[in-house]
View 1: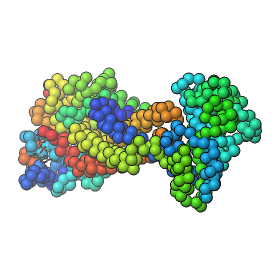
View 2: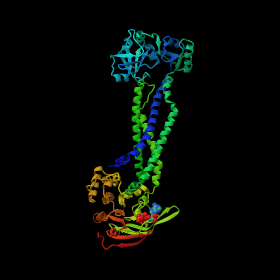
View 3: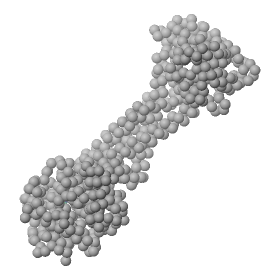
View 4: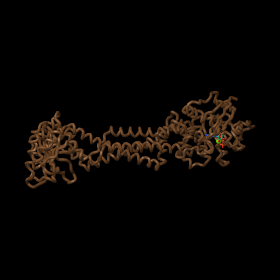
Length: 387
Length: 234
Ligand SMILES: Nc1ncnc2c1ncn2[C@@H]1O[C@H](COP(=O)(O)OP(=O)(O)OP(=O)(O)O)[C@@H](O)[C@H]1O
Ligand SMILES: [Mg+2]
């Protein structure tokens, strides 16, 4: 036996007490970690903000198309650098539930509005010359084990080809990093002209246009100018910042700022309260044990450290459970939201360390009062008759 | 005889509400090296208080306690704890052992404070448990031991770190005669063969006969101090 073993032995003899302490700490940290994760995903949106991009959709709804002539009009607006457009392909691979995002992108302008992606020379040529070529993210390539040159068939739930077939065959033309392109981790880019030439209906339309505003121009003015131009057309538009587009999904999660404060408060209260009460209880319940150990030569500070170590082990255990749970939750959310960046819990190693630091800090603060109480206790009196 | 434990004019008071309780008043006492002393007296006479002062668990309000010619440190709690770990072993009347640990683990506790390898510790613990006649009870929890066996494990724990002084507060108070005799014989052996200096609080006339000398306290004062003609088990 050594001191850590002694601590563990002490904990395992009171499984109910330990469980009852772990659960509330664990639950409150799950809330805390989820908030951190969602905030991380939120940061993605802030990155989007700095990119000065506006998204324009049909004012009626995003399912209603817009005309491909729209970008030409928008390009005339002062302060507009470039406009590109995208059509949502809405397909799946092999099974209807194997979904990921496919965008038909306007090839000549897309990478002027978004950062260009890095392709090898061969990939670049294929993307230029092969009509059926598609670009996919690294994650997607790993997910399906797709390589450049592979033929893949994607079934669209929206678009039929001119031969009435809704199964479209593509060739993997290139693989890129999703972060570079500010897009979903699981995304496929289809060449819009190939798609347009081969679709049975809807030719000449687009799902949304993306406008890049010049850095020195006022993005809000451009935004209202776009919608003003089309206000009296057959298809009025609705333009918003790209970040707002993303945010509208996350709004459903509630006001993040308030939620963060609430969860932080709960975490602090729970951890402080439970460490304090658990320690005070230990000191009272284990007076005899502590007195014996004191007689054997354990100083009060050492006894206090042992008790605090026990509580910290409980807290660390609770945080580990919470992290594992949120990791699982994050995977589940990814699966459910098709790995979309719009709804996501993102955790990195640094966050996990930060959570441990917060937990241990709170545990230590919660230990101070009971420790002071222990240092004042006259342990020797407990060894007298009647005590 | 070399005076090993010297109590000089020691007084100790406790506060009970508004009252001041006199636990010890101007006690003077010398105990020689390797002496076995029985400490007797009615309940509340200050026996445990005196023992705790000698063991550095408590500090006197007046007077001095010297061990081996040196006044025991009244310093910090940590200093006194270290001093206890080095110099004294305590045995109490009951509940000496931690219930969730085996006999072996209970005896190991004082050694956890030392720089020793785990193997060294284990060997030492086994040897000491064998010495007290419990070499075959290493993995028994306290509730799987008889009262006498529990007290012998407590003795093993008290001597495992090789202190010079053993302080026993009614070590046989809860035992039947047979178990009590075993424990008393063991203490006697520790005096004879291992040169321990022993102070034992007892109410039992029979038990005190095992000691070399009896001291009686009454109301915090030393009233009788007598040498036995012969300290043996009767
Ligand atoms: N921590 C304390 N607070 C207040 N009074 C105390 C404290 N410890 C001891 N006393 C008082 O000091 C006196 C001596 O107590 P002590 O425990 O030393 O007696 P004792 O001889 O060991 O008695 P017993 O035979 O019952 O164990 C008693 O009157 C007791 O009430
Ligand atoms: Mg007593």
